[in-house]
Length: 371
Image 1 (cartoon, rainbow, N blue to C red):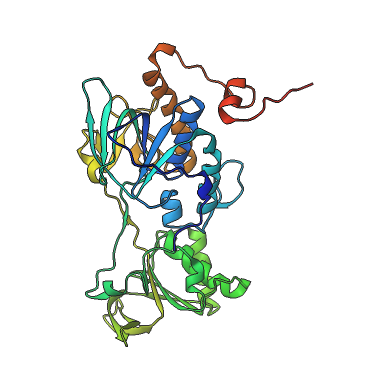
Image 2: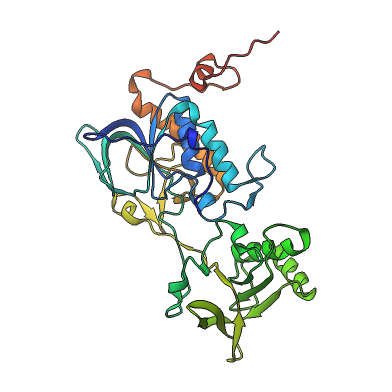
């Protein structure tokens, strides 16, 4: 099920002969990539945005569109989908062009200092700057390694929850010991008590050991619900499965005692985390540290002038992988890029959206008059 988006604020690319000449190309259409459009737009820099997914939102939409986010400044709570829609609305005045379903395959610096960029679909650009906002890269969920079980992928075996309603009334086995596994197990279990339309018929949490990588409060809540017989927790690993009439009917769980038990189910949800893959980015001549791009903290520039990295894909001393940190990085990267794009302007002065008539014009809003 594709996410529901404000389609009217999306401008997708039309057919184009020859390379598209632009001031900025943003790789990644997650929340940080979208906010990079905004910060560039305030400086009158239009951008083209490329993403391997078929829609904007990145991890927020791909992995947890309906889960609440609580640490966006001035927004007490919103879902990943709501955050994406709000960012799309915010960047509407700047007319960014989106290129979905394609990955950047080639980046090559030209003699004139600009970059030649080509995607997996053959879309080509000549751009003055590049902003890499690709999250953890071309992320892929870590898979359950059981021979033959992959044939149920997408029907009864899932590595992400795109629509919680699809699991209503089902007998679920949730596998994993991190936040995602605990959060979804509690979500579907608590729904039984709270009248949530996404309620599951039953929830079994399965983890290879009784220690967790999740928030202590979630672990405590899980044990409370187990004690109240609202859900079950099993220690063990999936070692096989049963099927009936071509459908997954049960998983075989081998415990630490060496005994294998059969656990009936309707749906198997697996949360082993993500395996980040930089993909072609690894071949662009950038300084890399543990699959992340090294940047400075003044401009968020990589070691290649004109290529910036913002959000979870970058690394620097004290780095915190938070959306709000990525937003801050976008602002500084935009000012650094403006100096490269508009060298004739000299120093780019900071202006405030509350008081600047110039920014009000860029945003398409009226300048307020105060008594």
